[in-house]
Length: 264
Image (tube, rainbow, N blue to C red; front, side, top):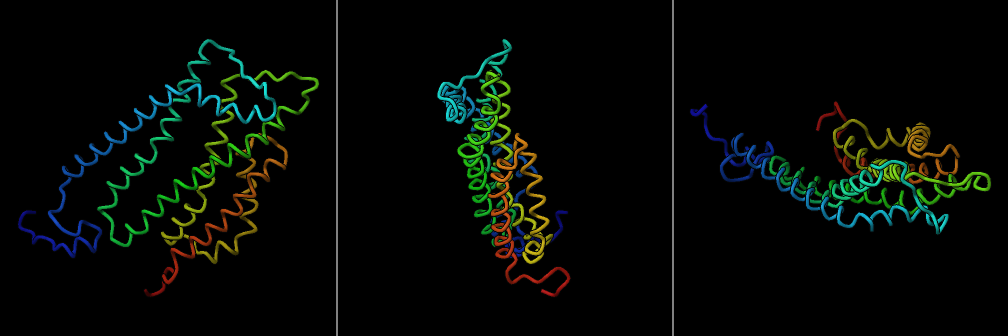
């Protein structure tokens, strides 16, 4: 292995390695990975501790959608461990969300040196888009879907049935909707990645739009906790718009590239 001719910097650059300087060994990569995992882990711990400290404020934010239906909306504890479980859930979820920019940066910093210059230029806006669409989905779930869902669920039969909501059940309900809607809003980025890998093309997705409606409504039915078509349409509508945004992204990343099997 030592008698091999050293690889020129241009050759390393063409295959996605560093453009200059000595090539990193496996041990160097492992050390770098360890350091970046430590930084990401430290950020997660610090952000989790901050979320623990402000757990009452965060809980107030999570109860706000219910108070749009009833200003006196409260949740109840049915078990001695409900309160501590809620605090831990708020701390862990809050820490993960607030530390996610640092975690994403550390992942990028580890991956980017092994990519070609063209791939590096595409990766940065791609990861920025991932964060933006995730936050947009979570915001849409918090300010639109949750109030509408709670207004429907708490209003049905309210003249006969008193609303006594457990804190555990309420937290599971809220975090489930916020998480899955945020994840569903990543559809344009998933489509763009599939197009970049050559798995789909924009024209195929455009022809597929009728089937996409059915799939999107199935996804909306799984995400929303209510069986009524209003809340399902409330989720499916933006997802359908995001599908066409994904088609545009697919067209952008594949513009000028030959189809699979065609000469470049």
